[in-house]
Image (tube, rainbow, N blue to C red; front, side, top):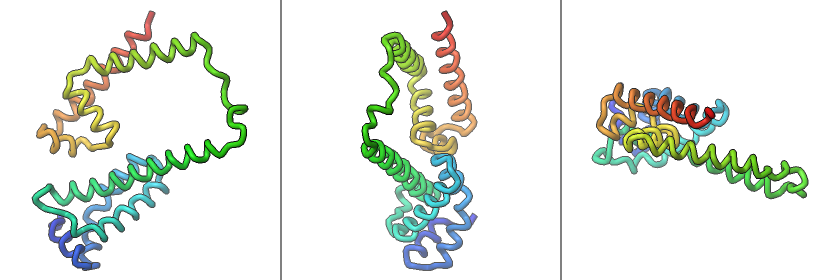
Length: 185
């Protein structure tokens, strides 16, 4: 793998060849992040293009002392994807606001039994999540909510990659077992 720090430094100076090499060296990981977060190839392509435009314009803001170049690039890509997701949610909310007489098309309000069932299910998920160890909750949140990869979690928490994978897997299984126990009569 080429020296990403040097490539970023030359990119900051406007070196197109360095930027091209940087892109080639990092595009596969960037693509994986975009596709994992956006779950749509077209959206992922657009986000990836936007992310590399940001890299071109913001390469001078990279500080080697703050972390690895690969982590900085991954953060730019993740943040670009998250910005797209937030924009999509806003657009959806705006389009729902513009629907005429939206109340007429809405499903009828849930009956008391349905509300009770939903409340119990939500409470069960919360109780099961709270039964996990703090490290398990933290790793699950960082992985599934923030979209960090297992490798990123390994670096962030100073844990072996295999340990991170094992903790996350066991946490998911513990949640599944807890929820299954709560559903049975």
